[in-house]
Length: 131
Image (tube, rainbow, N blue to C red; front, side, top):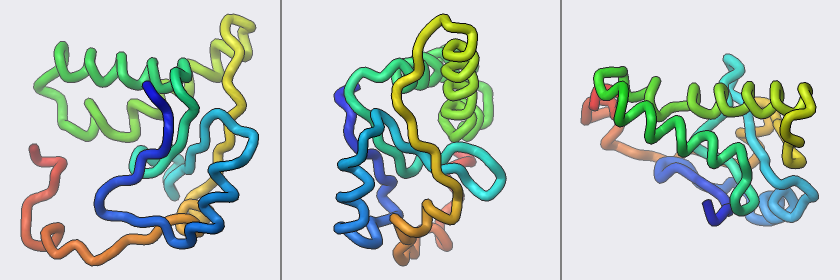
């Protein structure tokens, strides 16, 4: 809940100067969508203690504790982010809770900021999704 940027271990920042411009913008949270309209959970930024991240954490705890049998991607993957964003937008539109200033970029912009790097273990080991 301290805020900051999350970057999965198998990707890296493409251009530190461009990233610095992104990170210094006026938004409390910055997300990117995948090509099939899920919110990336492998690269995002958030100010400390946003209700969005609190919602995500609560869902993660609930999913892992109450639904241990679920496929791991459903418990911890981008679906957690999508459901939290849906609730945030719903609550904002109903006047129940204002939404933090949010930037949402598409999958093309995602690749402007990050890149994959060679991770041989991905080809040699079973997918994390089978855990």
